Length: 277
Image 1 (cartoon, rainbow, N blue to C red):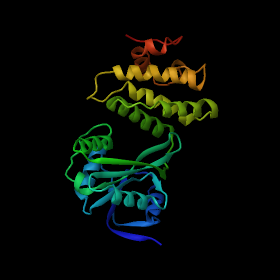
Image 2 (image 1 turned 135 degrees about the vertical axis):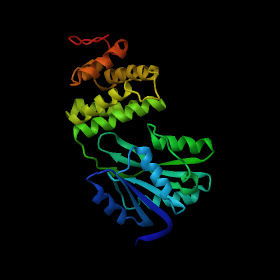
Image 3 (image 1 turned 180 degrees about the vertical axis):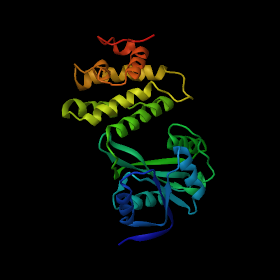
Image 4 (image 1 turned 120 degrees about the vertical axis):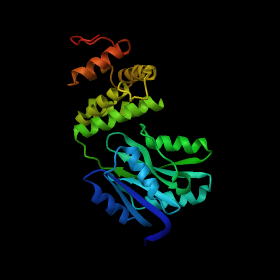
């Protein structure tokens, strides 16, 4: 039997995803029902959609759900009951989601409204990461759980995958975060299962590492990351798999030259490709 939680609301972040109806049905099937559901539609860039959500907050607890996310029935129940246990110093509880390319990842959480409603998020890569950093600087807890209680159902066209993983690479560069295991898993999907979407994920991620936003000028971390990933792919996935092999398949010649020029020392020369000036 479902219970309505008087102090819980839900915001659906919607930017034209075709899965919106499935997402809403999964919310309707929750064992803990929010008293209020709001759709934040068509607001961009990402930080402005989050700021719009913050301005619309009314109840003490709120869950943000991307429209490409399908929830398991007890998702809200788990987030809410754990928040009640963690106490006032916990600003967010988080569950894991299942992604068809990455596998397990975080990203779906319940937040304490009083902590975030006045926070204005700048136009920055990694808005959720920014909010978490700001809250932790104030002494609040972000409590992560290992439970997988949702799935991503994205439009898995190659362009969508490429764009998403390019953004992930940029985020990794900005926050100096390492994703060796994710990239290794994706490389295996491409190499052993001939998964073309995994290839576009790899290509987008490497592109993102060398295409920083205007706030990031230092590529030292990206050089280190590329070198480590090249070693991981060669020794942990397949001895004949090299960064050059991956990059030689890219269609964007300008991007290819940028990567090869910046990381020539780490990936080695690729026969037949020009490095540019």
